[in-house]
Length: 185
Image (cartoon, rainbow, N blue to C red; front, side):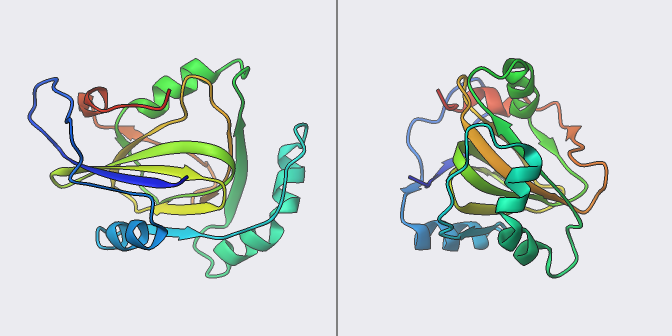
């Protein structure tokens, strides 16, 4: 179930915030809270089941209607699909890279088509943890400090949209804040 947890940024020590300021699985609350902070969030009930062996091209073909919907305004001409399973040979290396707080020069737009992933957004003096699941679309604006956790046994697939033909390009902040917050198991 999609969930939003909002924590105070906390001190610069290594203490983990114990209680969230807000925690909700209500999609209207999640959408309202995220939008008030400039984050687009939508839930599109798409009734598609992926074949375990589906290639990137097949995944993109299956989700043509969603892709066309997101690309309609012309902001995100580049699209790909990322699929991570517990046996992916690069899962640990990729997890560590995504767990480091970073920013992008462009929006980070993801539509989850299976499984889940945890976006952690560092906005002003808060950290918003958004557990995104199948049929969730999140658009993290350019220059938003954040990190992403796919868990130690990742199981997700997301269609990714870019306005940059190079795809995923990050600038790491060097802030160890992500170490103070709970990750996916």
